[in-house]
Each structure stands twice: as structure tokens, then as C-alpha cells.
Amino acid sequence: MDAAAIQEQSVRVTESRLSPAERVQEAVACVPAAAQAQLEPAAGFRRWTVRDFHRAYRSGQATPTMVARRFLAAVEECSGPDLNMGFFISCDPADVLRQAEDSTRRYQQGAPLSAMDGVLVAVKDELDCLPYPTSGGTRWLGSARRCAADAACVAQLRACGAVMAGKANMHELGAGTSGINPHHGATRNPYNVGRVSGGSSGGSAAAVCAGLCPVALGADGGGSVRMPAALCGVVGFKPTAGRLSNSGLLPLNWTVGMPGILAATVEDTLIAYAAIADQSKPSPLQQPELNLPMLTRTRSMPSIRLAKYAKWFDDSSEDIRSLCGKALQMLRTHYGWESVDVTVPEIEEMRLAHYVTMGSECTASLAAKYLDSMDRSEVGWDVRIALSAYGSFSSRDYLSAQRLRCRQMYFHEKIFETADAIVTPMTGVTAYALQDDALSTGELDYINGAALVRYSIAGNFLGLPAITVPVGYDRGGLPVGLQFIGRPWSEATLLHLAYAMQEACGKKVLRKPKVHYDLLTKE
Image: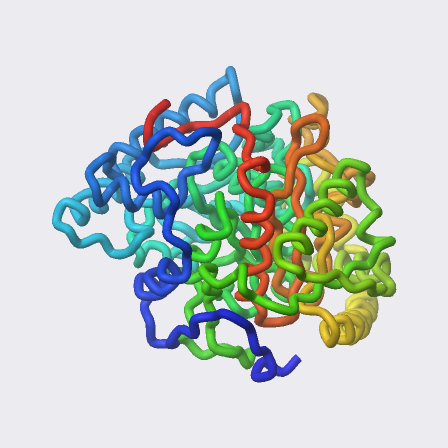
């Protein structure tokens, strides 16, 4: 799709020469003024946002050092034998405190770098972040592959003053959907510690859900940001392929995977996106200018059309189907936006072609340097099976998958001729139960796994931007997410849609997780 043809409503166009901190400033200007100027207890549960932390630091009600110490105490507690939440693979207290103390000094001097200065950000163990190794959730890759510099996204956040909180846990090599890691522990869902967090960016999603940071970085090759975000009741955002730099990201599946954002709110998603969407360097892809959505004008956006494939939309649990249907009705009621009926052909064929593509690229990336000399006993049982399947794909299989890719892009381009976005549930089921016998081996649950990835594939296989936002809870109190999939480069429109959904749902979608830490007011 021609990048120049994308025209979005109610946006602020940013200049390519802006620094990460300047882009954050532009994003903050697009966000409605906060309802609460002081850190007073809310009438119900609320998640502290980037702007809450920034205001607390500027007013002196808290300091980055104070918050970092509370964070470290919380990580120690939730990593202990009583909870064993498995949020982080590695967290260096001395490094976290050093960054926080530097930020505190900047605030004391009246010179914070940006609204993200002093804000904690967890980084999935698929992205390089000094001083940590990048292991991809394994026991062996961190020592075999030297980490010499921050990933581009991490470096841009550091330039804004953000405090890198450590390496978040992930499903080993991103090769699963549960978040169960036999080497570093299963990441448990803060809403129910007996349930999965999702994968593969489960640690990032759960850390945001538990209040340990308002923003985290993940990587999304098959729904790996959006799926755990939905299971943990937070926002998950995957921009268009090529919008963010893949530099410093493990090249596990280079044509379908990319960095993504997990955040407490849509506003925080926008601020983090602005920080890491660097347009100053040459790109192999023709990109339009970076548009930031003016969320102050979302309510006045006219004529939004949402494509819904009813048979696909309804292929989910009863609770998810009901909640997502009601969410669509709320958008019609609050904003007058309409749904249009469409058909998305060959969804199962697209899923299989994506799997062949992802697996072939993973094998090609890792085989020569690592897999050929690796002892298979060093990886979990589920990953052994996945790697065996990946290795069985031929070059002809890969080329056939790419033909299907072109065919699916044509189908989706036709849909976007009549609609601004495709709307689906984010997952077909909510977080399912952790099985004790899988904790030390890993797990391949094909039934639940297929239900979790059911709506994820187009975003990765076709490189389309996609976002999930919480819309409620099932009868067991587990979060449900709704997904918007956009045409290429329409990130601003998707953020508008997600913000509208967030505001329409209101406070009723905010229930306090059973494992949650208040780092600002110290409950």
C-alpha cells in the first residue's frame, strides 16, 4: 500500500529531526490533561501512568530513587518462594539505583530530560539492554551471543531518561504462547497466580499489570506482545513492520517479528511509541511522516468504519464474544462509528503460512552459529519439538508461504478500501490454568495455543499495525482484550480507536490484580 496515500484524522505530524525527548514532548501535548493533579487515592483502582510519575517527581512527592527502591523490594518479594511470579530473568539492583539516582539529580536541578525521566521500563529478554546478556529466555544464548550495545528502542528510551528495570521473562526463544519457561520460571498472571500470563512477552505484560512499571518493551512475531497484554489486562501495541528499528532485537523471525509496547494505558502507549519511533535514519521501506494522534480530539473523529468478520469474531469463548460485542456497541453509542460486515478468506491457510515463515526464519537465523552445536537437552521439551518442526520446512515450503502472504495482503487491501480498521477479540480464550507438571519441562498446549493466536497472525504475517485494549473480565475475573488491526502506517488511527474504547469502557474495566504494587503512594 502506498505510504503517501495514508491520510489520518486528528494528528500532529512530527519532524524527522526531533530527538526522542522532543518526540515525547510532542506526544504529551496530544494527551488530554489528567483528571487528577495530585496523587490522591482514587475512588477505585487506577494504574499510575507515566505522567503520574513525572508529576510526582517534579513536585517532590516522590523521587526516582524512592520509587526504584520500592520497585526492587517488590521484585524481591514477588520473586520469592511464596509468590514465585517469574516476572524477570535478571534485574541488577545496583544498575537500577544508579539510573534512578542520576534521574533524581536531574529533577533536583530542574532539568529532567522528558516526561519519561525516572520512569521504570522493563525490557523483554529478546532485546539488548546493557549491562545484561540477551538470552531469549534460554540458558545458553546469552553466553554464546555477546551483547555489546543497547537495542535501538532501548537507547531511545534511555535518551529520554527512562530507567531500564531489567530483563523481563519470556517463553523460551519465543516458541510458545503460555509464558512457561523451564529455566527461569513460569510467568504467572497477576489476576490469578494459577493462570498463564501468555507469551512470549509474558514477563513484560505481567510486570505492567502488577504495577512494577507503567511501560515495558516486548517483541511481537506472532501476537507475542498483544496476546499476553490481553491476558493480563493491559494495552499491547505492534506498529507497522519497519516503523521501529529491529537493531538489537534477536533475529528470531526477521520478516514477522519486531519490537512492541506494553503499557498501563493508551496514553502511556502513545508516549512510549513517540520515544522509540525514530525517523531520523534511512529506512529500506518508504514510510510516511510520523503522525501522533491528538487524543484530545478523538471524540470528534467522524465516519470511522470497523470491519467485522462475524464468523471469525464469534470463534471465541462465550464471555469474550459477549464482552467484545458489547464493546463494539459502546463505540456505536458513544461515537456513532459503524461496523461493516466483511469476509477474511483463508484464515487457516494464513496461520499455517505464518508458522512456516516464522519457523524457517528462526532456524535459518540460529542454525549455523548456535543450533548445530547446541545440546538439545539445554532447551525445554516444547522448544525441542518446535525446533524439530521448524527444521522440517523446506525452501519450497517457505516460498509457498510467501505466495500466500501476497494473496492475503490483496484480501486485506480490499477490506481497507471500505474500512478504517478490522476489529476482533484479541484471543479466543482467557488465561488458562498452569499445569504443575509443565513448569520444569515447558508446555505445548495446541488447543489453547491455537485459541490464543487465532486473531494475531495478520499483524505479523502482513506487517500490519495492531493494538489490543482491555474491555472487561470474564466470569472468572480474567481480563478480555479487543483488537484493532489497521492498514499499513495507520498507527495514529489505531491509537485513536484504542483510546476511544478505553474511554467508553471507563473505570469498570479496571479491577485491581491480586498481585499488585503501588510504587508511588506505597499502600
